[in-house]
Length: 220
Image 1 (cartoon, helix red, strand yellow):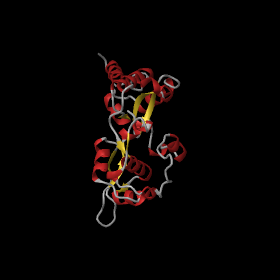
Image 2 (cartoon, rainbow, N blue to C red; image 1 turned 90 degrees about the horizontal axis):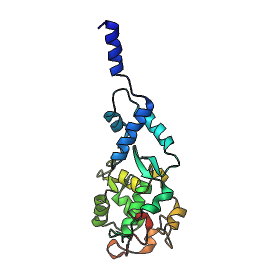
Image 3 (cartoon, helix red, strand yellow; image 1 turned 180 degrees about the vertical axis):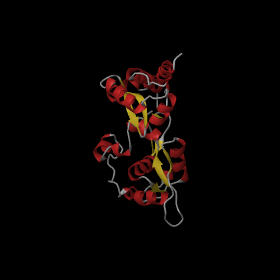
């Protein structure tokens, strides 16, 4: 075989597949992956020369208006049911996992003020936060430890997780609903505005639990 022929064969081995084929690859990976996956992880699974980021752009456009969408969750991507069709996926079972009022308030404060320390959470709520409340949110993997603050004692901070964003169909924390939407969901019904939660005068241990039937935002 001549040098020219060998070079042609070698170049063909490293030539990237057509973009349509790259889209199919990304589609297959997203479909088979339960958790959101980053562009870097997609790139690592695809053949040499592929452009996962560009393939995602094309794939997202192709799924616009369909029953399933390609959505960005934090810094990762996933295939999810279109929001307006979510009612088709609702379970006809009673939600057994419950969040106390303290847990809901703590989660909301972390989401809107992250990164935030436990002391800052207590200052905003006006009451102490029990270890059990934080542990529950950590176990649910809706919050995680953030960087320590460069203040005396270097306290740890808390931030919401990608699982939290994925559960609520958010790309990032900036997409969180405003007060009007929270009231519409029942989370702030007849409640004081942020900063005046202390008016509740309740401790974590004495607060009434709120189950999935009362707060649809926390349904699976």
